[in-house]
Image 1 (cartoon, one colour):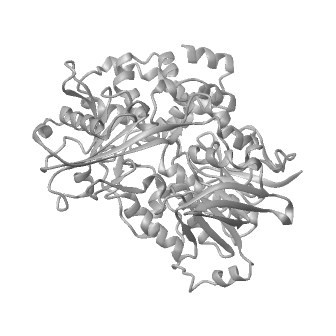
Image 2: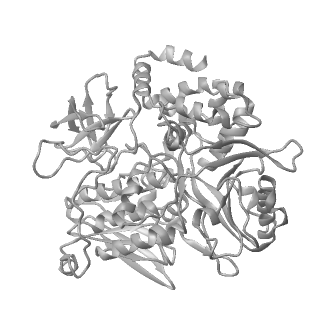
Image 3: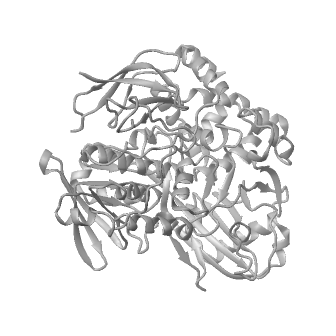
Length: 625
């Protein structure tokens, strides 16, 4: 039975046309579903399940072939009038609230507030906790196993007490929600956009050859249509290994960029295929694959293309490289993320009345989901004791390995398909290192990607240049990371540091006479999501079989937002969406506005619309061609 009319808008906020009705579906796994019955249109609307979050006053925007749910303004204006664009919505800045200046503390004592537990303290968990802490009538508590919650960005120490983080993280050009967070916290944690070098072993195997460099595309004028701009502005920057003929073999693969999200069936076909198979089918040359695409994916999705879903690979490359000329521009944090971003973020959450508790290992979760009796009971190990936390709703913002531990010990979760399927997902091993040299020496590029140096993805970064540490240390500081590093985990720290130093000296020979004065190695087993071929069917959505249990993190699927892959932006967006789902379930608070990351440029949108009209047999023929 229809209960609302849905109006389409483009992402600039222009009002479109009525595309259908929002209707209820039969209950599935104990959850009421929602269905958008969509009429045909030039906007490539199609029948699609919208699970939770569509209401009679909501607006649907068509975004990259997917529906974007845009909450309507609660008061005043036309229905669906408030639509986020690429620019941050102009809203009055809210004053900071503390426990002393808000009534929430006293409400909590009278048990009038709704209690929400967020488990996990990375970008996803902090996003959910922050937005929930901003709502009256909600008490939020974040639990994390780290003594100083900060997820994978928690800082570690070398033997001499110097700081090392769990990997260097880039912040790309199209991170609008992370950028808005920094504006709200009044912090400026990032460097300017910086260049990167892509290196391969020399023919002798002793040195290195520069394959190409990634310029700062946003500095290139004029701004050109996507793909054309990237091709023209990088053409003079391919030095070795990759000829023009090699690069031209990538062009037929662009059909996959247009085609892979055509519909659900097509997407799942690409997901079942490996990225290596996709590139081979498209006719990409061995050189283009080995010296450019393979190393790019090894450091972008932390695994070789033969072990990556083609669908997720396409999502990543669109988000990080192809959506606009500037998409590949990247900047870095000026210091440890824990210090520059998470510390002020934690302060803001606690000022708002939220609670953050570290050193807490969740062991078991029990769920009551029957009307007035709904609630969640969480058992956790806190130090040497066991404690129980009760809540009205819970958000899991953990890694896959963290979720597996909880599901294994929580029978009520394990009997639900979406949680049981998480046990089939895989994770990737990583190693983070840091080396302190005895003298200040330059590197040709602040960020470097190594193509065929190791059995896994490898990078190194001039931390001194990126974090302005020249006055704090006597020499240059280099951070080097390894991804998909299972084969390196058994090696000693000394051997790993020796490998790092040799890699640096191969690319930047000025380091050959430099001495190492301190170093650190941190090994992470099952650290990050592995988007393997066929993994889509096992990845959960954000809502679950329980009306009061939700998920956030980069591995959740069907997120109506352009941020994809292993990105802080995607983690942050899923945290905000999880908070919105909680507030909808609890019937309280205001929905967070999520800024869309991008929209297709006109020529890409035209090609996708044309591809929508191609019958499937011809579609199959074109992909083989």
